[in-house]
Image (cartoon, rainbow over all chains, first blue to last red; front, side, top):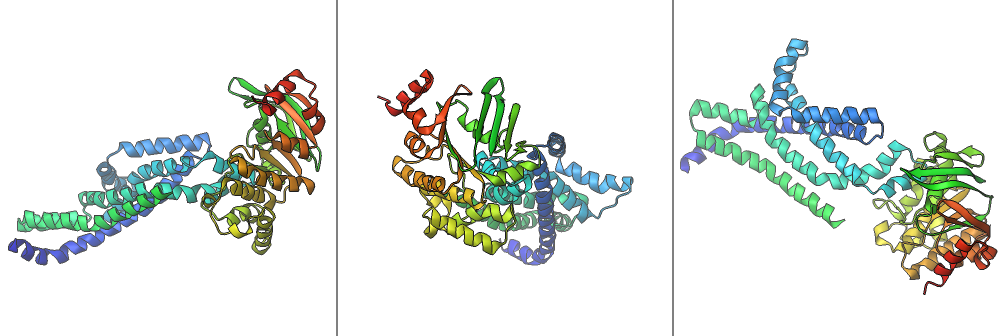
Length: 217
Length: 243
């Protein structure tokens, strides 16, 4: 145990650099997946057949490809097509695209859970599709969507470790590098796990808060 | 003001409107009565463009109702609708519900809309509930807010789709009172209702609909007191004397 604390003091600052990159990857891909997810969801519920089908196809393709393959494609294949991305850019883009499919389905479920009467009431006072979405449907859908959105945040935080496979020196890769050079696997990976857990706990509490609030309504 | 000419409407293979021809004059109160599933609500929903119709034509002040045409927004701002289940926006306050249409659809100045919103809430007896949210109100209060929301658009006509059917019996009177006042003030109203007392006292004309056709129509008192058609007589006997 004494050895673990000594290792913790020694490795903590290096791992903290990894934490910073983990947060950058998570927040970046969360934002991207939210925007893309909203776009896919809006296309799905637009009532325009071509847009709805395009969105459904995109979601299925994205869902059908493992995140790690998507990352490899962006980082290793795109340069062959003339587009070179940094490891960090490829990680944020890859995770953002991969999760946009799940976000889209989550948003769509939230939008479709809104009572049809709400949409009719909005239409009956002359609101068009976009105004109905903006003023009536989306504000109500947010409350439904927030608990699963919180879960996506937790999953993204953990899946940001996949960025290590394309050389982003986030927490998991920093841990692996330290472990392979010091052979202190137990100390290093226990620390890494504890750091992920420390970042996850506030998110878990946030999800619980969202669920309680949703349950009250 | 509102004209329906040989309107047909089917849901799948079921034809719910089989050639409805009727008109509503400015300032007139027309009640539509009839058994459940006869097509009463569908008529209102077609007038407001919430449903499309298959054949015939509906027009409001000469403007054809086509739910897919841009002109539908214009029609909806002239003909408001009050729903059976109120359909207030639960995430907005009572006052915001009333202001929503004039502010965001008609883009009227906020101060003007605010003043009108408060006046309308006072008119329906709910001035003190302006900052409450709809779920905090009783059904009757919610329906009165819905009427204020419809009035806020300054419509030329209001369509009421069974406005008291979802209310506790003791709350029905408040809503009917507000509607009677509107009728007295000259508002054009088309009311789908089972409230025969309201129809008799307030309506100028009553249409009895069954099986997607107008079986009988005429001045409210004569149709309700001396129905000519056997089907109307049978319906009214069952409604007025259920035992």
